[in-house]
Amino acid sequence: MNIAVVGTGYVGLVSGTCFAESGNEVVCVDIDRRRIEQLNAGEIPIYEPGLAELVRRNVEEGRLSFTTDLARAVGQSMVSFIAVGTPMSAGGAADLGGVFAAAESVVKATVGYHVVAIKSTVPVGTNDRVRQLVESNGNHRIDVCSVPEFLKEGSAIEDFMRPDRVVIGATSEQAVAILREIHAPFVRTDNPIIVMGPRSAELTKYASNAMLALRISFINQMANLCEAVGAEINDVRRGMGSDKRIGSQFLFPGVGYGGSCFPKDVQALIHSASQHQLDFTLLRATEAVNQLQKRIVADRVKQHFGADLSGRRFAIWGLAFKPRTDDMREAPSLVVIEELLAAGARVQAHDPEALDNARRIFGERVSYHRANYEALSGADALIILTEWNQFRHPNFQRIKHELRQPVIFDGRNLYDPALMKALEFRYYSIGRPPV
Ligand SMILES: NC(=O)c1ccc[n+]([C@@H]2O[C@H](COP(=O)([O-])OP(=O)(O)OC[C@H]3O[C@@H](n4cnc5c(N)ncnc54)[C@H](O)[C@@H]3O)[C@@H](O)[C@H]2O)c1
Picture (cartoon, rainbow, N blue to C red):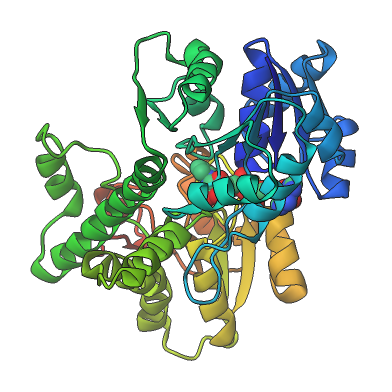
């Protein structure tokens, strides 16, 4: 099958590459000329484990290419996946400018029958609006469908290659048959392809992300209650998560959810509900809890050192919103670092992959360290914000030696409080008594 993928970000590049890996001929399109130049020069503009190798192989074998020429890419394809960004706009709604711009260009470039599959996360009704756009262009041989994407950054290739389910929102049998065929290689283990109406498919994506965000806010608020009453969140989490009805995933307390999806998707769903006179109180609370949780580490730092942090230095391990990505969109680290800087502190930051993105955001206001121990030098405390694997078993003696004081604020509960006590660290974590 010849496929065009519009947008070469975390979703588009992974999708296009995985479609090529299963034998299709894929052209990935972007309006960002520099990005396409990078890709054509063999550079991968984002960090996603395993992606570079997969891109290289499929380019070498002639199944994957990159261009800014949308018309040519679409003209030679039967299906176009739209995977452009849908960022949050000022009022909380999803900004659909990119989706409509891409859809219009695709519609104008089609030759003969074509499937436009919207992979971007879009509010209910977007497919209908794109269909109207098709009709106003007088082209009736285009089917518009919703194929929301559920991959997670950090394990995007595995998620794409073995999705728990594929959701297809379509009204045309021909389009469903084509999309089934494209996705068949990824559901060989009989995970379902669920076909439904486009509106339900659009909403399924938001419902999934909203539920996951809700679980995170729930466990974070439960962690705060644990601290107040002298309970241990890890015990509570394991105790409740082993109930099959509840399950253990997305029940880890931390410094709040971030990333390019949960915050904007929760807001967009609240906004969609409000347009139908529905106050989605549960999600407003989810978001409010999250905002507070993002501040919890900085608040604790100030409780320990005082509100005025001038003259203090803090080492931060972990800037990305989660491990195995370089993505810092809406990352808790942004809130923590701004709070520390505003209180007069200096910040020495380390992240295995996100330093370049951090530099674009903070410029010279923060110092950046490729090696984690280097970031500790002369700092008053270590603050951990992302649970990268390499932070799980550090050399504690070295940490103690490099820090001015043996204080750790662990926003991800990486260490055993008993061990920290034995090593004579002052150790703050989430939902567990400080030691
Ligand atoms: N990142 C994730 O983990 C994830 C997971 C599931 C779904 N999604 C959804 O997928 C969509 C894409 O997310 P992302 O993280 O890949 O975004 P991204 O910001 O990483 O990439 C979007 C790309 O689209 C390009 N683009 C924008 N307008 C364009 C146009 N008119 N024509 C061609 N290219 C255009 C941009 O230049 C950019 O390279 C969003 O709706 C997001 O909510 C994201």
